[in-house]
Length: 286
Image (cartoon, rainbow, N blue to C red; front, side):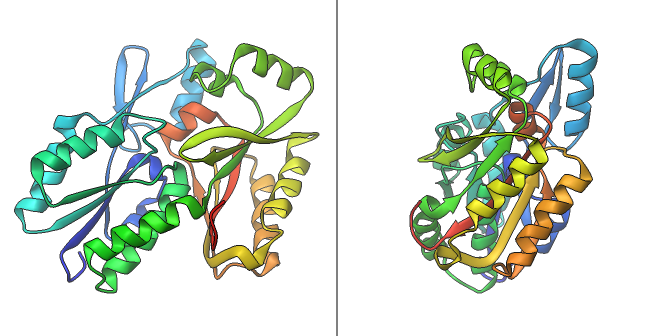
């Protein structure tokens, strides 16, 4: 842990790999994934590929569950009992009750800051890493929280989805929207704004070519991008498609670090396979 006794925690929807969590001393609490009558812990005893295989075999889609108050109390309390201050990140309050449950747990435990980062996946992960770096640099908890709250509306999280089946079953789009998109072979770009998911643009064409267009458009204005790091995050895509996207991002020369990550079970449960996004932070609000 860092010297000023601040612990950075997140729920599993931040989609940070074990290597990232170890590198930045980040501790994660998993959300729950239910397949049929069995419940698993995101990233602990189930993988996204397990979910896809189950869906193919049974035709049934996964269900996800928020972190409850008791689990959050049990997660936070050992750190606080050790005299640590906790700064916790989770999926947007607009998408899950996890934030509110963790906030209630923080009130019970004390010395815990729960940030509503109004984001998901590595959009959250970017903010977690920013907080972890500040904690390592000796910045106070109050200053970290204030700075993160400034960055929240500047965080650009978007994904292009190949097929809408999982999004539809998760209640994120209507049957009519799904039918229309499939009929017209549309590939929607889902943008997170003000903590909610919405369709920013609809692309048409082959998924691999759509992704190239999407990426070039996303990074077309480098003057407004904080260049420290960018995530290319996917939910299980063809390796050649992933490589082509990473190449475009690296060849742009905009970012100091380009990280490739695989989305975890919660995010994958809602977007399904063949979803990819490029996530970074702007200098101004988006």
